[in-house]
Every structure is written in structure tokens, then in C-alpha cells.
Amino acid sequence: MASAAEDPVLERYFKGHKAAITSVDFSPKGKQLATASWDTFLMLWNFKPHARAFRFVGHKDVVTSVQFSPVGNLLASASRDRTVRLWIPDKKGKSSEFKAHTAPVRSVDFSADGQFLVTASEDKSIKVWNMYRQRFLYSLYRHTHWVRCAKFSPDGRLIVSCSEDKTVKIWDTTNKQCINNFSDSVGFANFVDFNPNGTCIASAGSDHTVKIWDIRVNKLLQHYQVHSGGVNSLSYHPSGNYLITASSDGTLKILDLLEGRLIYTLQGHTGPVFSVSFSKGGDLFASGGSDEQVLLWRTNFDELNYKDLIKRNLKRLHFDSPPHLLDIYPRTPHPQDGKLETIEINPKLEVIDLQTSNPPVVDVLSFDSTTTTETTLGTPPDRSEETSGSFLNPSLVSSDCSPATLKKRTDDASDLPYESQRSIPLAVTDALEHIMEQLSVLTQTVSILEQRLTLTEDKLKDCLENQQKLFSVSQQRS
Image 1: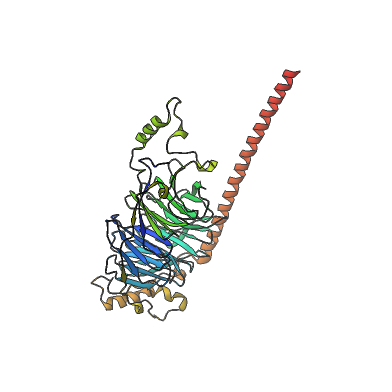
Image 2: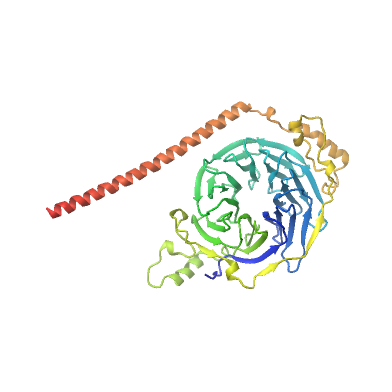
């Protein structure tokens, strides 16, 4: 079916990467798109016609995550080469590399004020870095398996993380403690993020599900089973009313969170889709996957007034019969009832004259100093990576940072908070967390029992009604 005016539209393809796309992010002004790939490169795409694309060369292994700083003057990237890089997103491409973890780094995320960076790694840790003082701050240890993603809350007070240990954890950045824990018995979350007002978190599950929790009451609000493959990434619309998801089933899906319904299925990629992101204004979104292509979409569906949309479609759909809630276009029955009657958009079949962008690519070699990333401070080996992460490359250091100042900051790293300096003993914290997990299990068990009791009551009611009907029929016959 042809797309209506309020439906998403695929505007452009970007081709230039030589392997799967792992991460996409819009610049704050929405004029550029940064992408990361298995080909070890970052690419910077400009939306102006005939503009050149820049390929940033520096990482030595798969680049797993990329993000613009809030003001757009820096790009952060994470890689399986165990490093994080900060790039200046221009044709000079100056960068600073620092050894962030002892295993592949899976994600990077700036705080909303740009002062901090959080990184997540397969070394089971989450690390927070100070961008202004240009040094490592602290680690968060509680996960027992690879950490796949970590994100700041909009106000910067919390961090949410997800791991292959099948937990999603909420951390308080003030006291460095894990203050909440959501566990799953089936799959693990590949990606997790806060909604724009910071009250909810959404997780993209390897078990094909999308879950949304309200962290104020620690309650699972919505549970979507709309994909037929693992969900790899998600992105909130700036309004907070919509969520877009990317899956290994090759589709993007857009959920209306106010209605609790799936409203669009987008077919544009051939193969798994690994990343998706709305622009900061919400008017665009981009996706990337195993087909090595970056797709740029125009959102459209959030531009029209909702009441106007209802009026228009009631006129179109209802000539004789009175309107009914389930008939409102493009809303559909809740996905949990198995009727996935969403609008499917396949731009490769519908759009003939689609603009394909295969711009000239300019390779930008980084000018970083790789010798400054590992500084020996005489600390124990297991802590060395935590005290060696100052950004010592002068190309990214502010003008007031003299070598002596940098040395002092590196020495100051000995003041970093370690587990042994906690106000609450580690054993007590572990015991409390264990109790919380047991309470969570009990709560889930009670919820299941309540559901079963309701089903039993419904069945008993049906039996009584059938018995009454049979009794009435037998009386009439006699």
C-alpha cells in the first residue's frame, strides 16, 4: 500500500561502509550523521546535496558505538580494540585515544551537560570519565557478565546499564551504588535507555521483546512482543510518546506508547538491523545494519494534530457505521492479541526515484599520540587501567592544560574512590541486593498466582454458565 502523508518516508541511502553498521547518531543541529561499523571506521555524513563524507581512521578493531557530545564539538567512539576515542568532527579529524577497559568496549554515552562520559565493557564494568578535567573518575562493579550498554538519565543523576547476566541495573552517580535491579529469566537486554523525562527505561531484548519499566514505582509498564528476532537497538522520540526499535528480523517498528500499540513496521534493510536513532528534533531517524547501508527516514507521523488525524480517517473509513476506537487509523489492536495488522512500509518496492547518496569519501587519519594512553603509576595491576586514562593528547586538551597540570591530574587519580572506601561495607550491600532480588522473585510469583487465580475464576464462571444453560434446556424438554 502507498504511504499516507502522515506515514514515515525513506529519504536517502548512504553507502560507504564496507561492513555492518553498529551505531548511528545525529549531530545536535541535525545537519550531520555519525556512523560506526565493523570495518573499524567512523563515518560522518552531511545532509547537503553532493557533500563529501568523512571516514575517520584510527581504531584497530570493530567500532561498536558512536555519539556526538551535546554541543556537537566532539564525537566519542568505543571499539573492540579496548579503547575509547574522542574525535573533533571535521576534516582534520584530530582524536585522542585512551585505554578505557581491559576488554572490548560496547557503548559510550555523554551526560546531557557534556561534562561526563560513561563507557560499558565486556570486562563486566562501567566506567565514568570527567570531560572537563579530562580524566577517569570511577568504576561501577556489580554485573557478573559482559555489559552491553550504559546510559545517563536526562538529569545525569542516574545511569542505567544492561548485561548478559540478564539484569538491567540503575545506578546512583552520587553515591556510586546500584539502587535498583530488574532481572529477566529468559533473555538479556542488548540496549537500554531512559525516556526523555527520565521516569521510565526501555530495554531491547535478545528474546525478541521490548520492555518499559517505570523506575519511580519499579513496575513493568509495557511488554511488547512484536519482533520475530532479537531487538538490537531502540530510540525514544523527543516527545516521549513513540519508540522505534531495530531487530535482527530485518525490520524497524514504531510503537505508540500512549496507545500501547504497534503502529508501523518499516522494511528497508536486507538483513539484521543493528542500530536506530531519532534526531534531536524528532523529525528524522536513521538506521543501519548488516547490509552496510545507512537509511535516513523522515518521521512525518508526529507532525499532524492527533484530533485532526482522527477526523480525517473517520471520514475516510466510516460512511455508515458509527466510529469505534479500534478503527482509528493508523492505530491497531494491541500487539499482545496476536493481530499484527500494522502499516507495513517497504520503500524499496514503493519509491522508484529514491535519492541514493554514494558521496566521495575523504579518509581522515587521526593525529593522536598512542604513547600517552598508558601511564605507569606504580599501582596494582588490577587497578592500572583506572588510573591511566587521562586524555593527554594536546589536540583535545584546553589551552590552560599545561604538561605540569596534566601530570598533577594524573597524580590526582590516586584519590579516586575504590570499593574499599565505601561508607557501606561490600558484604552488606551484596546481602541487601540479594534480598531485593528474592523480593522481586516473590513479587513475580504472586503476580503469576494472581493471574492463574483469575483464569480459574473465569473458567469456573464459564462452567457455571454452561451448567445453567444445560439445566434450562433440560427443564424445557421435560
